[in-house]
Length: 270
Ligand code: SAM
Image (cartoon, rainbow, N blue to C red):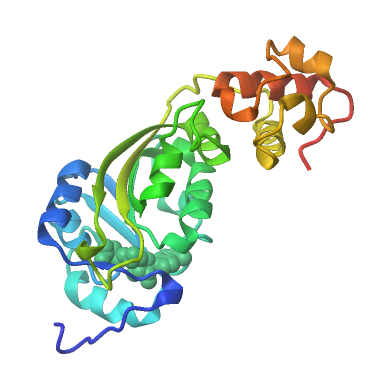
């Protein structure tokens, strides 16, 4: 097949194709796809992960943006009855089109690094449809996703993703597993959307507002960073010490701050 389709990896599509059979196998074992499950692969590329996913007999939908890869994917997998190819942009994809049941979809992908964070947020807007997600990402992004309060990595990404999901940093992958090799280390992360949010906010959008504002200047105290949003009394009413810095607060404390904001007159998330 390689002779028919000599595909040159495109930087603008974030193309770093997996070629290390040991790494591919380890990822597939972490995902552990089963017959009858609903899987969605984002960016199948030349099919490095797709092959194992389709052979598991799971029902597999894939979304690929690059026109040039579509014939190759059709040739490799087009005859499989459990394979369904969507040609388009995962960032614009309407996941409700898949008619998945609540908490049914298993989403996987060696994601294009340039769009990985907005894509995760796009997926989280449909978190109720998702059972779990397994992604290859830049290692430093995985460290931020899985971070704990009080560390340098704890920030907007950790909080907004941990609001929706349990996060597990599974293992790291070096640049040599890809063709072409990326300039950074990578890692596999598992995200499992909570069936019931452990710390539900009155208004999720206001949580985003508080977290964004707080981490705009992460070295400053909350009294300073939140002064446009909340008076010191409201911070204290949320049971938060205004002299702390944002990275010292856990998710529950940010939710209490957002709920204080929700109680203030004429506050909108715009
Ligand atoms: N899964 C393959 C592998 O592991 O070898 C390819 C991974 S490569 C890092 C990312 C893939 O995502 C490429 O095939 C690229 O064309 C595709 N892609 C990039 N942006 C995309 C988007 N917005 N929607 C869907 N696919 C996209």
